[in-house]
Image (tube, rainbow, N blue to C red; front, side, top):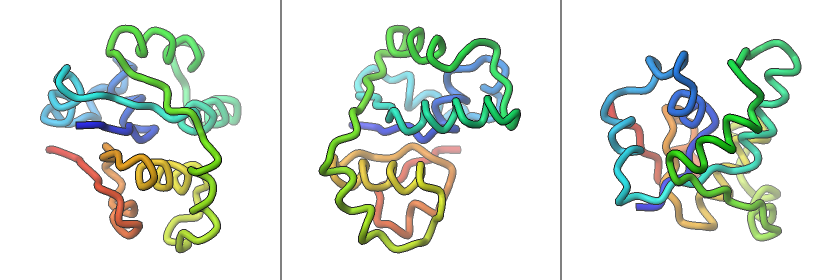
Length: 132
């Protein structure tokens, strides 16, 4: 399965102090090397903004976390393509968060399963997975 990680999913998977938030079944799904894991630069950007505004504290810079995790857990960065931006104009405004709207568009265009606890994505017709 091809899995796109929502921002919180990546952080809960990658940062030891946050891992208690990730259900064991979802963690096992992500650790299964039979699946391909993807992370959007939008999630890195969103995290950097939250750190800079004081809404989130991380043990090290997000870029360093991403560098380590892409190697340790074989996570691929999913580039933002023009084709991902096209549906943004027509996606219903179920969610005003621009980062989540981009993740929804990427998941739809690339036919990826989005790993997220946020059920708002279901309204977009995204294939969302969250195991408890």
